[in-house]
Every structure is written in structure tokens, then in C-alpha cells.
Length: 174
Image (cartoon, helix red, strand yellow):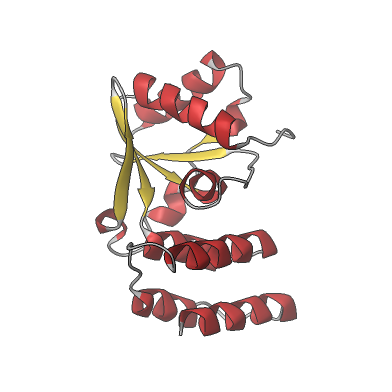
């Protein structure tokens, strides 16, 4: 998919998702950043993970993409692989929408940051910075210890740019 989805398009799609998809879903990635703390952010896809892991739910997600005339890769649940690897992920969810058939959640600050750590591309680092700036003006809190522990537990990298982003994020969290 080449077209970027903006805040208004994301809200329209997510409203439709809450109305058409049954059950509870977790929005992660750039789409979560855009609807939560960075409304100017665009994204090429929407990562929606069913909270109850189910192949039927994944099929319904693809059917929703088809219904909305989106390429199937525009709505995907592949992020569940990363979400479910984070201990206690299910305790760091915030509901942000309820529709006719389903509810949508976003990660809390700690889970959002932990999901960004492994890749920590420039875009990911920008999302982390934007979230931390946002949190400075809000009452929502961030427990930094688990994020710093997850950052310290990452395998070493030979990529100097990634090393730098990791070090800068650690400083921002300290």
C-alpha cells in the first residue's frame, strides 16, 4: 500500500471497525500514535490485533478491508507476534472506542514504547519522542523501569545509528 492514511481517514476506518468487528481489538503502531498523541502523523497501514487470538477474527479483519475498498495489507494483525511476546501486555490497554459489535483499545505508554524498541527505526524513535512530549502535558503516567529493562535486554547491534537511537531513548526515559 502506498497511500498514507491521515487522522480523519483512520478515525473513519476505526469507527467502521468497532461497528463491524466482533470482540476486543488492540490498535498498535503508527495508527495508534496518530489517533492518540500525534494527530498529524500518517501511516500506510493499520495494525489491529484481536485480543482473543482467533483465525476467524483475522478473516473478519480482511473482510473489513475488502468492505472498505482497502488493500488487505492496509489492515493487518501481524503485530500480534510482537504484542504477545511482552510480559503483561494485556494489563497495559486503554479502551478508546466502542461500536455496535466491538471495542477498540490502544496500548498504554509502557506497552507502546516496548513495541517500538526492537526495530527502533527513525520513525519509531520519533513516535517515542512524540509520546514522551505528550505525556509531559497529561495525567497519564509511564512506568519507565520496565521499558528501560526491555531496552537493556535487547541483543547488541552493529548498527551505529540504532545504537545511538537506543542510547538517546534511554536518556529520555532516565
